[in-house]
Amino acid sequence: MSGHSHWAGIKHRKGINDAKRAKIFTKHGKIITIAAREGGGDPETNFKLRLEIDRARFENMPKENIDRAIKRGTGDLKDGVEIKEIVYEAYGPGQVAMLIKTATDSKNRTLGEIKTILTKNGGKGVPAGSVSFLFKLMGGISVSSEENEDQYEMEMKAIEAGAEDTNYVDSVLAVYVKPEELQRVKENLESRGLKIESADLVYVPLQKVSISEEEKNSYEKLLELLDDQDDVQEIYDNL
Image (tube, rainbow, N blue to C red):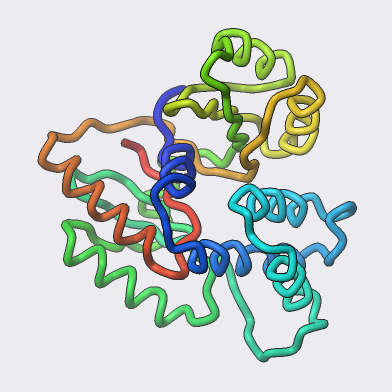
């Protein structure tokens, strides 16, 4: 199961290349609202909300934006907007299987825009269940490493903390755990002095595919366009 996961790569790319901070904050705000609606507005008792707040803070999202998103989720801020989390399934160039997680207040608008991006860039949307069986739901923890840090030692710490699998993407260590172990392992890693960039439930491919260089270029373009769509939160693939 070890190997590439676009989950780790896209987070790293967002943190470096995406200059549109307001768009990033809007995306974080939507998922914080969903977490607060599902489990309440107290991050001490709502682990999912705490994770999403940590991710938003890592991107330097202002506290007032975070608080407003929480209040929208708990109903203290009544603006008539209901945000839902929806995962769309698709194939990209080279038959790369894709799961596209969104947070949207308009299912029809989001579906239409994603379909347009896919069809214009060598991809296609497919019915629910068509590619999801190619993935396994796991807990994913993204750990940043300093230039002089020993990668082997970091991986050993992760394994001792309960990691099922690990791999490096650039300078980020992706740690995979059983979904029910996510909170325990995250806290264990923090107690060992590791810097957590993000933690969430993620989809890990059971098998991976290889594509040509031309298909890879087309696929990267598709990823960038999807990532730029306002409602897209995460993209998982089996490349």
